[in-house]
Image 1 (cartoon, rainbow, N blue to C red):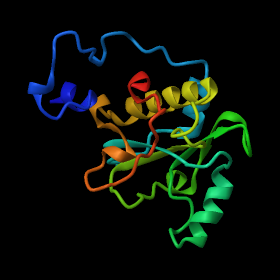
Image 2: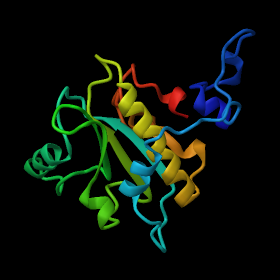
Image 3: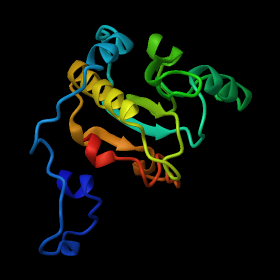
Length: 179
């Protein structure tokens, strides 16, 4: 089931000889030198935490940072910054900079309990993710998985949430490379 989910296969009858599949843990992922920055952003493991999933988003905008998204989310009556973490693209924060949102600092759940929300600034329906953002995301996910024992199968894209009709985080989002 995990292989089918990770490879977007709904019916095993769809599999054909020669189809390339992503096999988790087949090749070790080496987190970048940004691992320490990710550890600082995530902070110490919180006692009594029940974090079980990580959901990945893109902002759908070419520019932004946590402060700008917070203002926009307040204006839209979302209670401030929706995401726990925002990874910058170099417009209003450094490329690959991990910004920690108020929800993470206070360990407040968003609208999906037990789900860590990470947003990368950019529109990955129209553009590619920068290598700085990619390395920071891999490092942050690595730290969060270690701290909260989150299985790789519990990392998902926003579009993977049942009932969500969105293409977030975009067709150019390197999801399987991240895994």
